Amino acid sequence: MQIGLFFGSFNPVHIGHMAIANYMLTFTDMEEVWLVVSPHNPLKQKSSLLDQHQRLALVAMAADDHPKIRANNIEFQLPQPSYTIHTLAHLQEKYPQHTFSLIMGQDNLGSFHKWKNYEEILKLCRIYIYPRPGCGPTVFDEHPRVFFTAAPLMDISSTFIRKSLQEKKDIRYFLPHRVWEEIDLMNYYR
Image (cartoon, rainbow, N blue to C red; front, side, top):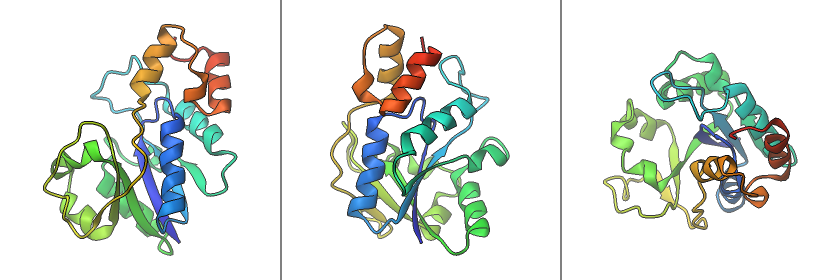
């Protein structure tokens, strides 16, 4: 099976994430998309980062009504900090019957050369790029394992969502319905 891996902190998951996941299922050869929730990086500020299990629960709520989009916590079980190359190796060992591709925002492609063992990542899987605002060309644009998609430009960020929630703005339509209800009920990010 062709699996698309969409890594992120998902802090919180929003409609942009879900639209990109759905786009990849509909317009590429991916048969499932796994939303891989990244655990807390101890080197980063935690003040606005919701607990990894709460973020995973929100992602599971967002994906609950789609049979081919799944929440995934594989990086919770791996040594920290987690590197994509280690996660890929672990997934390929655990699921040899699957072929994995990465789903990546165009903004991350510019710094991809800084990723641990990025050359190996390119050997192991294809990378599907979705557009992000303000991104220019990179050295990877012509790489045979990098595929640019015509996904709609989603200029929504988790930072915008958190800031709006802190300011007590009603942003319910920027979040999957169940995610909005849970965030509102639990008073997350306020």
